[in-house]
Length: 279
Image (cartoon, rainbow, N blue to C red; front, side, top):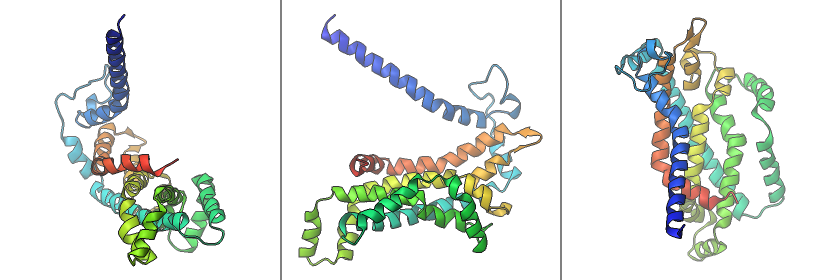
């Protein structure tokens, strides 16, 4: 068999493998989208209906009638945006400090902070809940905004940005000083813009984590007007059963912000993964 034929067989095998893997990944998303347009009597029928017929738009209308879904959407959106901005800001400052500024016990403090990433969320749940109770922050959005910025997610951001800043040559700092920049000016005008790929990566991961968070809203929120989308999705299941047609419609709407964020930041996201490190 010639090399040309061997290469074609190898290429065809690669494409087949990619199609299979793509199908396995995209299949659940397609099923979610298709189910959201099905009549509720056909959602669980067997054999399954792969293409919705007729296409039912009433599920989306009923979704907003069954619950104040728009309120839950806004709650999740503003919490995720604040957590994302706060985490990126703190990580940019702390990461630069650990990478470029000399101060006593720097490596020890960094390792101590890094070790906090190893502690499972469930271990700190009760002490944190007691602390929030004393602060009278239970049944508010405060526990969903501040602790995530300072917890394991925030420490991961510090680690990611530190690894990125370490890859930047020291000559940039020296050139900024020669041009008359103070450390703060050099950080804002030179280092921070260069860190945009790592910041985009951190922003996507943080937004995704905050948007999908279920455990913390479940233990901190009591008032329905404060609920977020993951809590709202659980409300479609009760003693009478699960309203799959509404859950799928709600899931489609919940997925849209994630797709939009990733669509606009995907190039920076890939650059950040490649450049920062994680090496």
